[in-house]
Amino acid sequence: MVRAPCIDKNGMKKGAWSEEEDNKLRDYIERYGHWNWRELPKYAGLSRCGKSCRLRWMNYLRPTVKRGNFSKEEEDIIIKFHQDMGNKWSAIAAQLPGRSDNEIKNHWHTHLKKRAKHNNHQVSHEVKQEPNSNIQRIINFAGLPPSRVSNESTSSSHRVSDDSTSRSCVQQQRLLIDLNQEYEEESWEEDCKLGKEIEC
Image 1 (cartoon, rainbow, N blue to C red):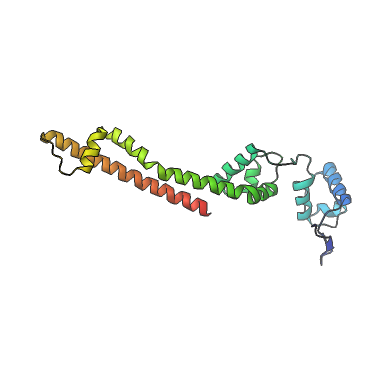
Image 2 (tube, one colour; image 1 turned 90 degrees about the horizontal axis):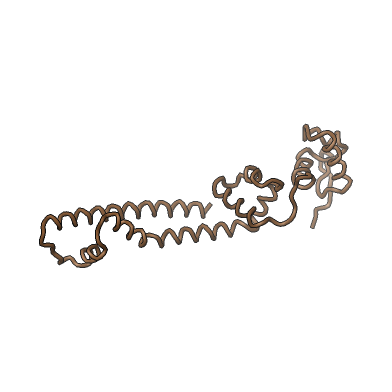
Protein backbone atom coordinates (compact mmCIF):
# COMPACT_ATOMS: atom_id res chain seq x y z
CA MET A 1 0.00 0.00 0.00
CA VAL A 2 1.51 3.34 -1.08
CA ARG A 3 1.46 6.13 1.48
CA ALA A 4 -0.74 9.06 0.41
CA PRO A 5 1.12 12.33 -0.25
CA CYS A 6 1.16 14.83 2.62
CA ILE A 7 2.71 18.23 3.37
CA ASP A 8 5.23 18.58 6.21
CA LYS A 9 5.76 21.68 8.42
CA ASN A 10 8.23 23.15 5.89
CA GLY A 11 5.68 22.98 3.09
CA MET A 12 7.43 20.02 1.44
CA LYS A 13 5.39 17.26 -0.11
CA LYS A 14 6.01 13.72 1.13
CA GLY A 15 4.82 10.33 -0.04
CA ALA A 16 4.19 8.84 -3.48
CA TRP A 17 5.33 10.74 -6.55
CA SER A 18 2.77 11.67 -9.21
CA GLU A 19 3.40 11.25 -12.93
CA GLU A 20 3.40 15.04 -13.31
CA GLU A 21 6.18 15.40 -10.70
CA ASP A 22 8.20 12.63 -12.38
CA ASN A 23 7.93 14.43 -15.73
CA LYS A 24 9.01 17.77 -14.22
CA LEU A 25 12.07 16.21 -12.56
CA ARG A 26 13.01 14.18 -15.65
CA ASP A 27 12.65 17.15 -18.01
CA TYR A 28 14.69 19.46 -15.79
CA ILE A 29 17.57 17.02 -15.27
CA GLU A 30 17.71 16.06 -18.96
CA ARG A 31 17.95 19.75 -19.83
CA TYR A 32 20.18 21.16 -17.07
CA GLY A 33 21.62 18.17 -15.23
CA HIS A 34 21.62 17.67 -11.45
CA TRP A 35 23.99 20.42 -10.37
CA ASN A 36 22.74 20.90 -6.78
CA TRP A 37 20.12 18.62 -5.26
CA ARG A 38 19.15 21.12 -2.55
CA GLU A 39 18.43 23.91 -5.01
CA LEU A 40 17.13 21.75 -7.85
CA PRO A 41 13.49 21.26 -6.64
CA LYS A 42 12.90 25.02 -6.48
CA TYR A 43 14.10 25.53 -10.08
CA ALA A 44 12.28 22.43 -11.34
CA GLY A 45 8.99 23.68 -9.82
CA LEU A 46 8.69 20.83 -7.29
CA SER A 47 7.54 21.03 -3.68
CA ARG A 48 9.95 18.26 -2.70
CA CYS A 49 13.17 18.19 -0.69
CA GLY A 50 16.47 17.64 -2.49
CA LYS A 51 16.97 14.19 -0.98
CA SER A 52 13.59 13.00 -2.24
CA CYS A 53 14.42 14.26 -5.75
CA ARG A 54 17.83 12.60 -5.72
CA LEU A 55 16.45 9.23 -4.61
CA ARG A 56 13.60 9.40 -7.12
CA TRP A 57 16.04 10.11 -9.93
CA MET A 58 18.73 7.61 -8.94
CA ASN A 59 16.39 4.71 -8.14
CA TYR A 60 13.54 5.13 -10.65
CA LEU A 61 13.86 7.82 -13.34
CA ARG A 62 17.43 7.48 -14.61
CA PRO A 63 17.49 6.19 -18.22
CA THR A 64 20.26 3.69 -17.34
CA VAL A 65 18.32 2.07 -14.46
CA LYS A 66 18.05 -1.67 -15.08
CA ARG A 67 14.66 -3.13 -14.28
CA GLY A 68 13.49 -6.68 -13.71
CA ASN A 69 14.71 -9.65 -11.72
CA PHE A 70 18.37 -10.16 -10.82
CA SER A 71 20.17 -12.79 -12.87
CA LYS A 72 22.14 -15.64 -11.29
CA GLU A 73 25.42 -13.92 -12.32
CA GLU A 74 24.35 -10.65 -10.65
CA GLU A 75 23.42 -12.48 -7.45
CA ASP A 76 26.79 -14.28 -7.39
CA ILE A 77 28.57 -10.92 -7.83
CA ILE A 78 26.58 -9.40 -4.95
CA ILE A 79 27.39 -12.33 -2.64
CA LYS A 80 31.09 -12.30 -3.58
CA PHE A 81 31.56 -8.55 -3.06
CA HIS A 82 29.46 -8.56 0.13
CA GLN A 83 31.87 -11.14 1.58
CA ASP A 84 34.80 -8.86 0.67
CA MET A 85 33.34 -5.43 1.49
CA GLY A 86 30.36 -5.96 3.79
CA ASN A 87 27.37 -3.57 3.57
CA LYS A 88 29.04 -1.06 1.22
CA TRP A 89 26.10 -1.01 -1.17
CA SER A 90 27.29 1.87 -3.37
CA ALA A 91 30.64 0.09 -3.94
CA ILE A 92 28.80 -3.13 -4.83
CA ALA A 93 26.44 -1.19 -7.12
CA ALA A 94 29.51 0.08 -9.02
CA GLN A 95 30.15 -3.54 -10.06
CA LEU A 96 26.60 -3.88 -11.46
CA PRO A 97 25.88 -1.12 -14.02
CA GLY A 98 22.24 -0.10 -14.04
CA ARG A 99 21.44 -1.40 -10.55
CA SER A 100 20.97 1.08 -7.72
CA ASP A 101 22.52 0.61 -4.29
CA ASN A 102 19.04 0.71 -2.73
CA GLU A 103 17.77 -2.05 -5.02
CA ILE A 104 20.82 -4.22 -4.29
CA LYS A 105 20.43 -3.69 -0.54
CA ASN A 106 16.75 -4.68 -0.66
CA HIS A 107 17.49 -7.75 -2.77
CA TRP A 108 20.26 -8.81 -0.38
CA HIS A 109 18.04 -8.62 2.71
CA THR A 110 15.02 -10.29 1.09
CA HIS A 111 16.67 -13.05 -0.99
CA LEU A 112 20.44 -13.44 -0.72
CA LYS A 113 21.26 -13.11 3.00
CA LYS A 114 19.95 -16.58 3.92
CA ARG A 115 21.59 -18.17 0.89
CA ALA A 116 24.99 -16.63 1.76
CA LYS A 117 24.69 -17.87 5.37
CA HIS A 118 23.82 -21.37 4.12
CA ASN A 119 26.86 -21.37 1.78
CA ASN A 120 29.17 -20.24 4.61
CA HIS A 121 27.80 -23.00 6.86
CA GLN A 122 28.55 -25.60 4.16
CA VAL A 123 32.11 -24.29 3.76
CA SER A 124 32.77 -24.46 7.51
CA HIS A 125 31.37 -28.02 7.59
CA GLU A 126 33.73 -29.04 4.76
CA VAL A 127 36.69 -27.52 6.62
CA LYS A 128 35.85 -29.66 9.66
CA GLN A 129 35.71 -32.80 7.51
CA GLU A 130 39.10 -32.09 5.89
CA PRO A 131 41.64 -33.07 8.62
CA ASN A 132 41.56 -36.83 7.84
CA SER A 133 42.56 -36.28 4.22
CA ASN A 134 45.23 -33.76 5.27
CA ILE A 135 46.73 -36.18 7.82
CA GLN A 136 47.46 -38.50 4.90
CA ARG A 137 49.29 -35.64 3.16
CA ILE A 138 51.28 -34.97 6.35
CA ILE A 139 52.21 -38.66 6.55
CA ASN A 140 53.43 -38.55 2.94
CA PHE A 141 55.41 -35.38 3.69
CA ALA A 142 57.03 -37.00 6.75
CA GLY A 143 58.16 -39.92 4.60
CA LEU A 144 56.62 -42.62 6.81
CA PRO A 145 54.90 -45.64 5.33
CA PRO A 146 51.23 -45.53 6.45
CA SER A 147 51.40 -49.09 7.83
CA ARG A 148 54.30 -48.16 10.11
CA VAL A 149 52.51 -45.03 11.37
CA SER A 150 49.34 -46.97 12.16
CA ASN A 151 51.28 -49.84 13.79
CA GLU A 152 53.41 -47.51 15.93
CA SER A 153 50.46 -45.39 17.01
CA THR A 154 48.25 -48.37 17.98
CA SER A 155 50.80 -50.76 19.39
CA SER A 156 52.95 -49.39 22.21
CA SER A 157 54.75 -52.74 22.63
CA HIS A 158 56.19 -52.66 19.11
CA ARG A 159 60.02 -52.70 19.21
CA VAL A 160 62.48 -52.03 16.42
CA SER A 161 65.73 -53.95 16.65
CA ASP A 162 67.90 -51.44 14.87
CA ASP A 163 68.57 -48.33 17.07
CA SER A 164 69.19 -45.96 14.15
CA THR A 165 65.94 -47.00 12.48
CA SER A 166 63.98 -46.54 15.70
CA ARG A 167 65.51 -43.08 16.27
CA SER A 168 64.58 -41.93 12.75
CA CYS A 169 61.06 -43.30 13.22
CA VAL A 170 60.70 -41.41 16.52
CA GLN A 171 61.95 -38.19 14.89
CA GLN A 172 59.56 -38.62 12.01
CA GLN A 173 56.70 -39.33 14.41
CA ARG A 174 57.48 -36.14 16.34
CA LEU A 175 57.55 -34.18 13.10
CA LEU A 176 54.22 -35.75 12.16
CA ILE A 177 52.67 -34.82 15.52
CA ASP A 178 54.00 -31.23 15.29
CA LEU A 179 52.70 -30.78 11.73
CA ASN A 180 49.33 -32.25 12.64
CA GLN A 181 49.02 -30.01 15.72
CA GLU A 182 49.96 -26.95 13.65
CA TYR A 183 47.35 -27.87 11.04
CA GLU A 184 44.63 -28.33 13.68
CA GLU A 185 45.43 -24.93 15.21
CA GLU A 186 45.22 -23.25 11.79
CA SER A 187 41.95 -24.99 10.93
CA TRP A 188 40.56 -24.01 14.35
CA GLU A 189 41.44 -20.34 13.68
CA GLU A 190 39.78 -20.57 10.24
CA ASP A 191 36.65 -22.04 11.85
CA CYS A 192 36.58 -19.15 14.32
CA LYS A 193 36.87 -16.61 11.48
CA LEU A 194 34.08 -18.31 9.54
CA GLY A 195 31.94 -18.39 12.66
CA LYS A 196 32.40 -14.63 13.17
CA GLU A 197 31.51 -13.92 9.53
CA ILE A 198 28.37 -16.04 9.80
CA GLU A 199 27.31 -14.22 12.99
CA CYS A 200 27.77 -10.86 11.26
